[in-house]
Image 1 (cartoon, rainbow, N blue to C red):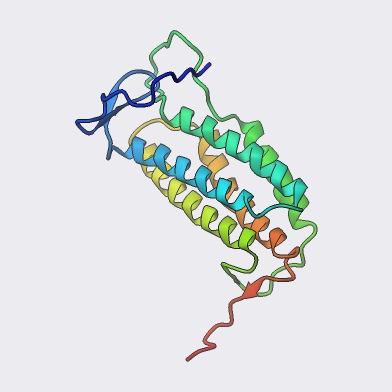
Image 2 (image 1 turned 90 degrees about the horizontal axis):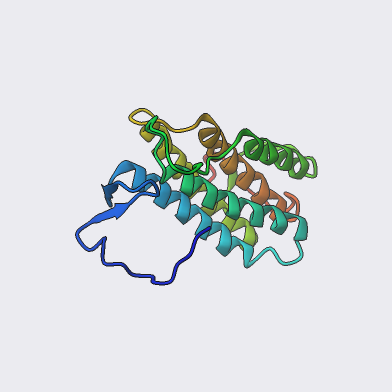
Amino acid sequence: MVKLNKIYTRTGDKGTTGLVSGPRREKFDLRVEAYGTVDETNSAVGLARLHTIGLDELDIMLVRIQNDLFDLGSDLATPDTGEKLSYEPLRIIEAQAERLEREIDALNGELDPLKSFVLPGGTAAAAHLHMARTIARRAERLMVELSRQETIGAAALKYINRLSDFLFVAARFANDRGQADILWVPGKHR
């Protein structure tokens, strides 16, 4: 269980931060960038939720995702070095990615198929969900890069990949179930 009595510790004043398992890393370390970008994604989802009033089913999904993103951050902040830890580290599991797939299918089932790319925008909820999607894609790029240097669980990589897909479909759903989507018209302003 997490217990935070003091918010500042002064331990990061020299540009390092502590990982869950104890070691310190530079604040610009790729692992720190990855879990920091996951945190940024979570904040963007929280901002989108300010605009999901009346979309109760979607909002419930987004709350679960915000919790999952904390799980993912913890996963990334606890490197798998192969050493035995005195506790069971929190890891993203396959079931979390599978749940996203089911939710994507449920939301997408209410949408007309696309005939063009969608421009980010429409309703406030959709615009914020598109922003969260692009941040999630950045988190994914960082996680993939990190996975080439250190161990990252396959379920974590799958989850972040599905998350951006979910956020795309959720943005369309928030755009009056796709009816308010703004479609790209190639070469329209040549």
